[in-house]
Length: 429
Image: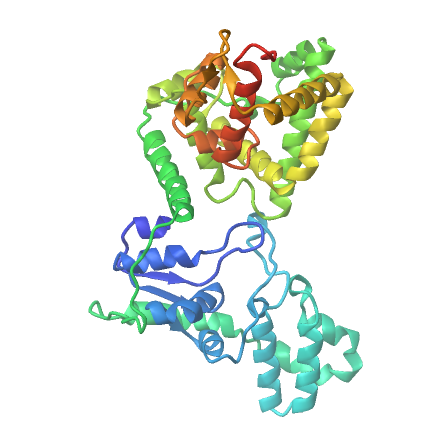
């Protein structure tokens, strides 16, 4: 989607991550094509999407695409691989099944192995989970039986995925400017709430990048740049002298560190644009509407823009961990409430509220006259006014940030609270 917003003359899709991050979405490809941008796909995820969307006008290139188009290949795992992280140059850790098939077929055609042996080895590799697939590993188990094949493979390295990428690049280089892929199934693009949610996230990131790019104030050295200095070590001593405060900070910091570790392990350190979205959300919540406001906020805390970026990655990782382990997180919240003694009081309050709401859906004023239930906007103003804060502009986002599934769940909880407290029967706390 970010690429399409730049209005390029053409987009070529080769590969993408799919396990730890959302993969390239069919909807965003259709959106790009509806905007008149030709989209080509090859080799891996690009081949998959092209085979799925060629009837709508996406242009597939290469042998892998044609195999999916013609039904020769069906499983997504045929092109899936595991790889190391950015620090190791995204080094491959497994073989793509399409490349295994290509190599063994080449050895068969060269007379190195029989068709039956090629089929047997193909089946052995296919049965292995994609992230651990290795033709070399399978051959090592029977080294004496495959010395000639191992030597041939070493002398004839080949990757059909790589060959398809080269073909795609040549196609894009030589593509006439007048070339248009006519869809066999014309479509009208329909925006959905899910598409709009992603679109708003991407636009928020772009707005933030432009916003931060306008800042001309020189950033001060960041907290993390001098984290090992003696003054900050002494600051930690000051915190440690207040055991309760230090324990609370320690638990929160440990949870954040573990969330970041998990994100890195899964290959998603904060998400591709997730941390930018979190910074944008924070900026709006803090009413930092001008670059100078951001600089002043950072300066008052002896922080740099790099610190804010790291903080955004932390927020994003914690948010992702909370969503990924939602049920476990909720159990830990209940355990913490029990340990603090609050669970007993809150359970009693919840039980009283349930009885009151079940017995009467109508609240009465002090004169005994029925009081009409407030509408959504009135209940929101009542709640946030009681908190002494302004109503957030995006209630759905606020509700999800605070643990509700969606805005309707949040409003349902507010109505129950209003019925419990508005007539003075319950205690608002």
